[in-house]
Amino acid sequence: MTTPTPRVIVPSAAAKGEFFQVKTIISHGMETGLRHDDQGNVIPRKIINKFVCRYNDSVVFSVDLHEAISANPFFEFSLLATESGRLDFVWEEDGGDVYALSHQLAVG
Image 1 (cartoon, rainbow, N blue to C red):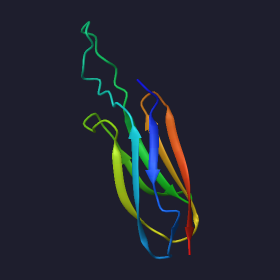
Image 2 (image 1 turned 180 degrees about the vertical axis):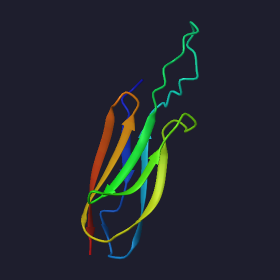
Image 3 (image 1 turned 90 degrees about the horizontal axis):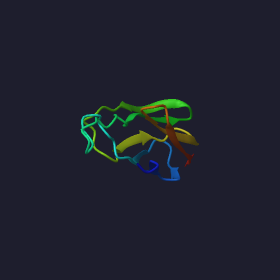
């Protein structure tokens, strides 16, 4: 399996009180643990099991993921621009690996 690659699309600036769109995706095969290899052995589960977005350290979007989620999970949501600051995006994988990105947002 290749190394998961997270990506986000977020504006760099927004007007105070304006809603803005956030789009996130992570390239990940999302092995469910329900398939078998050519020798009949169960392929271990390895999925992104949690995604969290924080806006200046406050959780503004969070989701727990399970086997039924497709590969390369994509999320799109709206946030209200309240103040300039940092958006942190964190994807957690079975086994403890964590993938993260940060983005600065200027609010005027």
